Image (cartoon, rainbow, N blue to C red):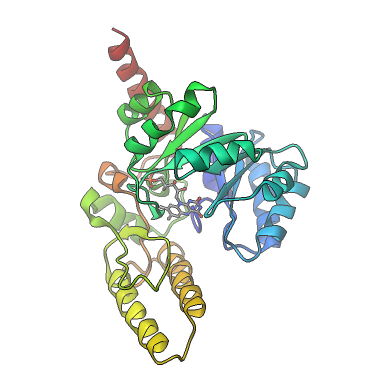
Length: 310
Ligand SMILES: Cc1cc2nc3c(=O)[nH]c(=O)nc-3n(C[C@H](O)[C@H](O)[C@H](O)COP(=O)(O)O)c2cc1C
């Protein structure tokens, strides 16, 4: 999670028996290197680094991960080609890619991916159109051939983890629940809004016109959600007046969210900042430690799987 998945949180997840992933998207290469070093100072366990393939600095960011001999690189935000996957693997890292459909999952495996993650419409942040449960079933042919597939989006309880494991998933990726953990450095005022929110409060950013092409974002509704509509109207007017190109408008629209996320996570601006959250936010009612979250997920998943076996 951009602005959230930093050394302290990632290390705590790894130390508690999970697999933490640092967010490198939108960051300067030098700061990614420093964050990797900080994480290694806090844990001896392996962790992953998530890079966003659509990021302008993807090649420099990836170079830092490769040189730092990161054990796992997760390629999100776009479909990587085989050359990018080969670069990511060039120093021994395992590479996990986001697959929005079965055909793309098959293509990514042929292109050299070691495992896949599918992310449902319920997830926080930038999302695709298909629900997690539907995507999980779509991936069954790959799972039956032994491909490792992780699932993300809307997961907040051990029971949900158990249901996806029973379906054949290798594991579950949770975002929002950890954003609200004690070790998360998200601003306390922001965390407080998440703890009060219901699942229906995590809404999708509306698209006013098909000429504005962006990946929809799921976030808790606030002033920023309204501002996003206003910004789209402004950009559409500028396009109609031929003052900017469609490409320029789309770059502007993407830039909207990155700045707003920082305002929420770092500054605690819960009105104008972007409160990216999955529909799982309804299951998050307390600010627990990472250790307590993972222990609870494990215990409740084990109980649910035991019930199924019985
Ligand atoms: C604040 C926030 C920032 C996120 N940033 C990223 C990111 O930089 N890269 C990425 O691949 N996914 C990102 N995600 C998606 C998460 O990795 C994860 O798949 C998602 O949170 C799962 O849904 P959940 O929040 O319902 O658990 C982000 C999610 C949130 C809530």
